[in-house]
Each structure stands twice: as structure tokens, then as C-alpha cells.
Length: 105
Image (tube, rainbow, N blue to C red; front, side, top):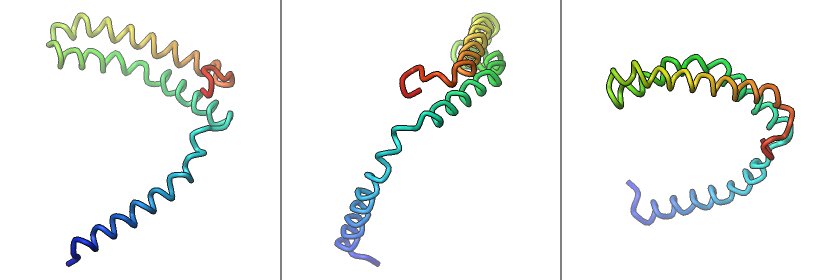
């Protein structure tokens, strides 16, 4: 069994190692143009493929929060609206993935 000072020493060494490793990851916050474009393309494709899921997900969430009569009315309308928005956003991102908008994607 380790004593209290041994645990403190072990914790101090671990903190120093984590502190030394942090600068190694500092340069990874600025992605290259290609990685930003591919991330934007992937996000757009995912939005286009998953937009029909909003027709199921949104009424279910509304039903859990406000009850099932609300899910059958408001939830369906919100689901259709979110499906359209997600689909349009996905199509725009797929169509403009090579353009650096917004800055740094």
C-alpha cells in the first residue's frame, strides 16, 4: 500500500507529463484547407442522408416533452420543417465544400 506522499508524488509526475504533452497538440487546432473542405463535405452528406430522420425524431421528442397530442400536431410540422432545413443545409454544404466559407470552415 502506498503512503500519502507517494500518491502525491505520482500525481505530480502525471501532471508534469500531461503539461509537457499539451504543447504537442497546440498546432492541431489550425486544420489545412483540404481537411476543412473534406469535413464540410462529410457534414453536408451526413445532413442530406439523415434529414428524413427528423420526421421521426422531432415528433418523438415533442411527445415526450408535451404529450402525444402535441406530437401528432406540432411535432409533425416541426419535423417536416427541420427535415427541409437539414436537407437544404446539407445540399448547400455539399455544393460549396470547396469554398472556404465560413473562414476556416
